[in-house]
Structures are given as structure tokens and as C-alpha cells.
Length: 349
Image (cartoon, rainbow, N blue to C red; front, side):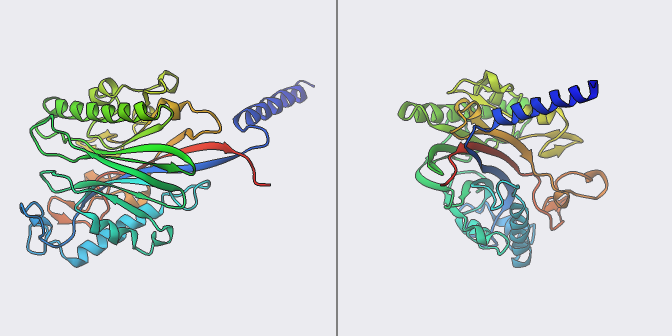
């Protein structure tokens, strides 16, 4: 009798939770939002006026020829082709990227047969970065329609770095903004270089505030290689991205990657320590959004086995393109990340 009663209680609890998670008469719709640092995706042509790309040319240090370039394109497309879930079988709606030389490398990437069926479109802008790399955005026009693109220069630091790209558009009928970043590196040490990333975070926050002055209901997503972890000052203090979802105000931010890093899961490793620089941070009105609006569901580090090195001290780390001057024919020194957004929609009659 006690066993039967316990079963009834458990069944009713599960049923009530399922009903609460999914509004009656509605079905759930999902959208993937991903980010991937493509690690020095350069073409083979010495076409940079300041010779910032010479190491990625056939005569340069890396002997970067057509064979290596097209292998890199194939590998990156292979990785991106795996950004699918049961609810997003056609891949993410939006993929932010960094460490790309120009638009043409993205054109080659999206044309690769492994992902060409997705018909990914490109948003790109040439930045003044000292290394000659930019950020960009790939999107599936079936799910996302671009309305406006602005690029924002970080002038508060002495070193030329990547511009922040803000793309406003419609995600299946709902306006959102995506700010793609590659914040200044830790060159010179984490503590010494922290003010540069704090300035980048302040610029990001300023962009978001300007968007909300125009449209207070807009959801804002900040993504990129931030060169800092969730608990570092740039993210936690300047940007104010909260660890707990309930603490994020509508015009504040929630950072879902704290807990993952606490579990020892990262996107890149240095001296046997994992970092999680590749973050996708959502505004509070997405984190705690209504069921019928896009709201945060889950975060994933795509640390697929084929993206991992298997050799010696590098075992388990991202399998990069080069290591100690040797061509590894790998992917990137970063694992990609993705979040899923969900919303309830009326079923078609």
C-alpha cells in the first residue's frame, strides 16, 4: 500500500512539473545561439598592407599553403556541422566567430559541403586589430533576419584591437541584439592587462544601454572570446553578469558559465588549468523571460572527442592547428559554446 501511494505521489509530481514547464495548448520552439573562436583563420594571400599576415602565407613561418588552408576550412566546417540538437536539427540560428582574417575566409567556410545546406549568411567588418583578425556573424536566414549592423571601436586602450559588432535582427519574429566580441588579450599578464578588458566590458554595456533606450523590451546577447572567466572583474563587476539567474534584472545580465567552470569544464587550457573565455551572456529579460518570449534554457561547451588532442601533456585539450611550430591539422585552441533559447508557441491548426 505504501509503495502504491509513493508511486501515485511521484507520478502526480512529475505530471504537475511537466504541465508547468509547458503551457497548456502550446508547443515549445528552440533556437541555438553559438560562438566559436576559429583560431587564426587566414587565407594564404599576403594582402595585408601592414604585413600582419605574413606568417600565414606559403613563404611565411607557418608555410601556410592551399593544402593547409583548405584542410582548416574543412575541419572548422566539420566542427560547426555538429552544432545540432534534437530540437535544432538544422544547426544554430546564429553563430558568432572570431580570429578571422576577412570576409572571404567566411565565404569559403559556409560553402563547405558539410554545412552549405544551411545557407548560412555572413556579417563581417574589417577591424583595425594589430594582428589583422576580426569578429563576424553567421546566421541562418530561415530563422534570423538582420535589420541593422553597427561596429564600435574600443578607443580607451592604447593597443588597436577588434571592434565590437552589434547585429540587431528578428529571431523568428522577435527582435534581439547580438554583440560579438573578442576582448583584448592577457598579453603582459592577467592583472596588468585587466583594465583593457574592463574597458571592453564598459563599451559592451554602453552599447546595450543604448539599445534599451530605443527599445526597452529588446533582448541582448553578448558573446565572444572575452579573454576572462565569468568571475573576473570585466564580466562580474563591470558588465555585472550575475551568477544566479534570479539576480539578473531585465536590463542586467545573466552569465550561465560560472557553474560550468566550477565543475572543471572550460573552453581552453593553459598550464594545466582550464579557462572559460568563450561566453554567451544573456540579458535579464531573456534569462527570466515569459514563456511566450525567447528565454534561456541551457548552455553547452561543445567539447566533442574529435576536437580534443590525444598526445602527451596536451591530452584532452583542444586540438589546435599548430603547436610549437608543428602543423597538427587540428581545429582550434578553443572549444565552441552554445546556448539554447526556447519559447512557447501556438500549435498550427
